[in-house]
Length: 236
Image (cartoon, rainbow, N blue to C red; front, side, top):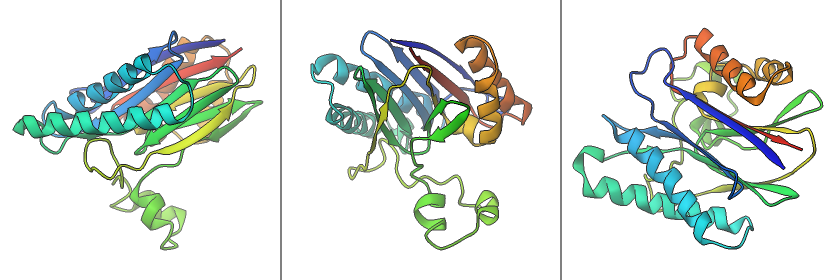
């Protein structure tokens, strides 16, 4: 059994919210997307991607990891097509991360830098790896962590939904353990709140809703420079 809750907030700087999330317990599907693009394009991209993943899962009876690969590929196509058909949406894209419940496991897929963490026995462990300049270029060049944290390219993605036909989807498996918390979030949260503070917020008592609101507050207390989304799952 999985209990879930999600919340999204525009943050303290942005006038609109380009993040989108989905809780679909009947499908065992949980998704977070962080859109990008001018005007309302980012909002369109994240919504199209999330809706597409849901439709593919609804129409696919199997629950293997390949279904998320298929869903992400279709989302990439749909976002690209929408941008081609409307000049105002040109250049839009989105990150995308999803967890699909298979009973004993969670299948996880990600594109971009939205993340999945697991929290169990007081330890917060990242599941996904960002597809970003920092990971794909900076660390390979041997740059130290202090330099990477302030590098002007630190927010640049190397992969996103809707920007290239050559999509690379990272896939993972997470063993579902009783008492485990699973956090899906956009970089408006993990980009400003240190992991030790994320762990402390998850360790504190309270409902999933209270924990999610606590996470949002932590990001806003640090200036909330971006949209903030947190989805929490509790395995029982």
